[in-house]
Image (cartoon, rainbow, N blue to C red; front, side):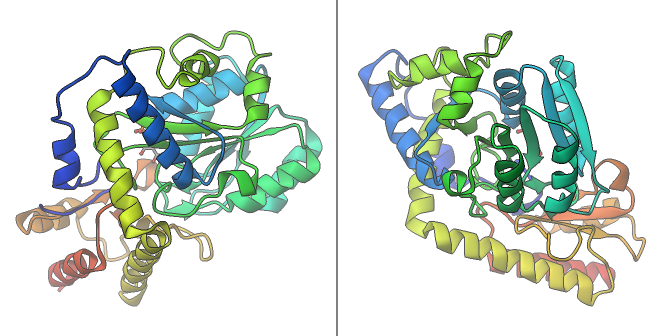
Length: 354
Ligand SMILES: Cc1ncc(COP(=O)(O)O)c(C=O)c1O
């Protein structure tokens, strides 16, 4: 397997890939219900929640849409400090919501004082926050942000995108008071793309009952009705759920704390490497992601040439994202990657730089 240091889709372990080749079964069957229930119970541990788990046949963006569609009738505050937070804002607007932006410069975090100011000016039904901004490698302080919402505007729902961090970083949904937490399969969970997981609090589901035009495919009340019978309203992505079942077992064999520590150690190594070579990080100190690092290309080499060089050695990294495309590059350190893979990559990069 040639390691991919890109922020998804990431490499998938052979036994997880193989799990997808199991024979299909009818989804209206006891066997499927057992699988659905088992995977949901395991996912609850990963989300640190007692709340319901939804398994969506869509990538994470589908659950971004579900979040604003189900839990917001009119007003939502979108915290925007990168491309994926921007996307969530766009999704809210495209669904007819009155979305305001709490705008923060790319590379900086959304901090509690900024959120506090915004919440003092206006009341919102919900706030959207991207936990780990994949475009910049910034990790927003979600626990503190959720605490601000609870203190200043307790009926405002806290909606969190953890697409590029859940499974690599500890996010305690219940303890932090998150109302909706979503992720995609193809990043820290190291599964193939196409499956999203999300969890919603009881009060969020109660709010959804009052929201009109929740749509059909992502109507979480419809999903909930079927979920209570350990099933889905539509045909589920069965091969991905087979893979999820196997992968969650592998994750628990490694141990959650051990997995989070491995991600933190890989991040520390990559970030130290860049700084030692005079290349600043896009993310401000104190808010650096444990799963992806964006590095300013201070040396001005063509990133495409670097990737060509790495590709010959069976590796690849990612361009900068959006406006940072030409001036930065990103190294993901998530999923199945180990410190030894990071060392191999960084040695090859040193060879290229030399
Ligand atoms: C933070 C974040 N949110 C949302 C998305 C969109 O997820 P998906 O591509 O699974 O729809 C991504 C994709 O990279 C992401 O990194």
